[in-house]
Image (cartoon, rainbow, N blue to C red; front, side, top):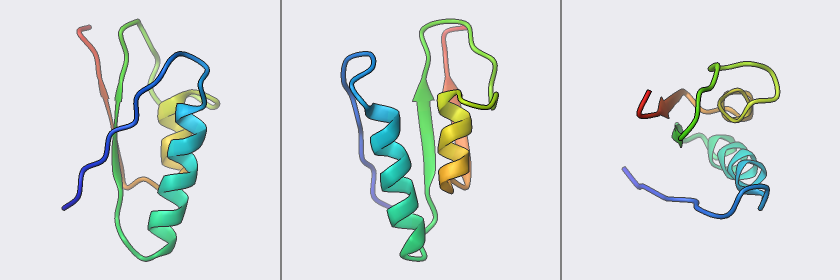
Length: 68
């Protein structure tokens, strides 16, 4: 298993980068899981939201980590 982290400021393109990475890695026949940190209230897997975009890119599992 390999673990990679992506961090950055808001609206810096982190989710777009993750979509491209997940698509590329799954396209090579590997399985990908993602963990999305949220410091605010969120509704999981709503179209357009980060967790939804991770799943659409091909992630097998998407986990949302939040203090709530």
